Amino acid sequence: MDSLEKVVSEIAAACVDRGDGLSLRVSNYKLSVRMHKFLSNAAIWEAALKHLLQKDGSRVSVISGELLRSTLYVKLDGKYSAYIYKGGHLNVTGVPDVGECVDTLCSLLDWPLKSIIREYTTVDNTTISGKLPTLSLPLHMDLLYQEAANVPAVEVRLNFEAFPSLKVKTDSGTLLVFATGSIVLVGCKSGKDVAQLREIALHLLRKCERRVEAATAAAAAAAAAASTAADTTA
Image (cartoon, rainbow, N blue to C red; front, side, top):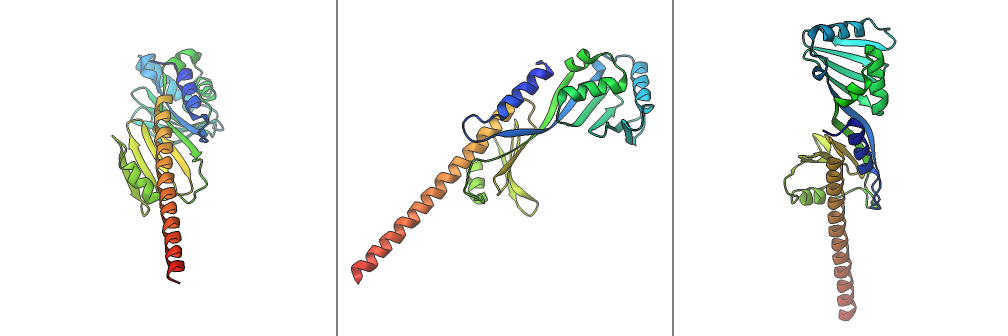
């Protein structure tokens, strides 16, 4: 399994503009720390949770949950939302800086196990946003939908009453395309996932722009032919 730092680095690299005009930005990582890998003793886990609850309220805020019964939901330093499960599993959202998050967890739980926590922390999900490189706005959502339906192994939805975007779901994650040209990638766990979704987004944009250009050219040609015919008749 790749290290957390390597996965995060690859995701960041996949977001950089590759000369195609599309630059993406990671707004959130959802991390999962498989604590049971190094907290095999239930008593240690219980002590860690109780210690967390005794922390200064300015750093730890318990929102809901029952200790050692199901799920404990806390806010860490007012920035990170943590779901702590009885079985020794931890999900953290609201993480723009992965290293800072791991350091915060170690500090709050008084664990001198930073390297071990990093070893057993994986990326469960990312939220990534960007803007398609086009001046043809608003986007022709009906054309995008038609082109997306031709992409192999994807699930496509377009329902403006339910959600104002084209939704393209793949094994790598989900791509949301808005008429404004904004896009959002969710569910990616690796740089490869990000690369696949950005390629689909650019593919749909190119296909749509070609169809719009062809339709515009055909309309112009028809108008020119009609004008010539009118001149000839006169």
